[in-house]
Image (cartoon, rainbow, N blue to C red; front, side):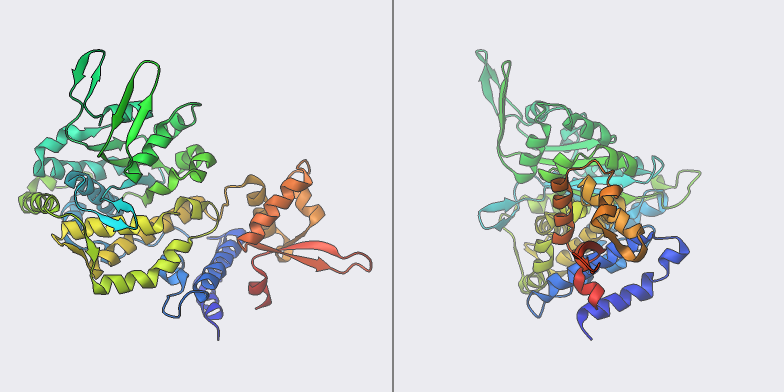
Length: 469
């Protein structure tokens, strides 16, 4: 039996009756099955050692409801110890505690240790957005615990936490270089570390919609580690050697509403790790975090920060290098649709996470446990994106057609029925482009129906090979 057939059998065992139970719509079920076949096809084209993409990226692990939790491998080392110390005394989601621990530590260590990919230097600079189904997901408390530990480990860093991300100019000003302005010397900002914490990240996304606002460009350049510069009629500033990290909190409804397709297309969205979080437990009395001796954690965190300042270029050891070669084809190929666009920097994200885990472990090399931990957290981010955005392609016409195909009898529609499904007012070339998009991502394929005269064009849900099998 082919790998494709085996994976489909596994899918049927897990989710075959999900439509009948009402936990999946027919469109969601067929769309995910189509995605699974597409992923497996990608894996088949890679080296024989490559694992099926569905296995590597954890697609089969995602249940119909809430995504499967972060795998235990992600709670490796000091980051895991921090989560285990805090989690019993907090209603925060362990995934949120873990991700924010990594982002905050990555900012603490600054711009020293790095991993080189061709001519690009990757530092432990991470952007993460914690996404709650509701405002009661305890996102805020998850950050507060981590920040307090970081402030204890490095009191000077406390002055490098800001909020109110409203303009590119403002972000550059917070890390600006020394410069003479109007005949006076501006000493600039010496400490180039900056952690932006936005408890209402929806406000940031709304700012991006303003015409002429350069915030998106500056944020993208900051993640890339590029020099930041702005020139206006009233002021000019530049910032080099910056080390900027971002933690945002938002609800799923706000994220779907305000994450504009432009920001998805231009790469703003895929520079973030998007992680679902929900209240882990009810603690009416607020837990007993005050009774926990956090000094050993603070001590270890301080040592890790010091260590990170003594190393320069970091590479993978032999085992990690072999594992990277196994997973690289699937990470670099990515996924179709809106989920694919938001996770399009998988290789870089996993690399930066692995680098962060290594530094927390006082290691001058990225070892296999660091890479496996990074991969586990990335897989959860991927499952979170799939849960939030589903099989959406980000193209309104294509998404409408895909939904209509999912609800149609036998998953097929004629060209006339498709035109009616999108409202009957769309131009033929718009529909053609949408259908081509569905076909390119193997979410639908064209067929012909004999009518006794000219064959009729019929579109079917899913890839042609999946239907034939």
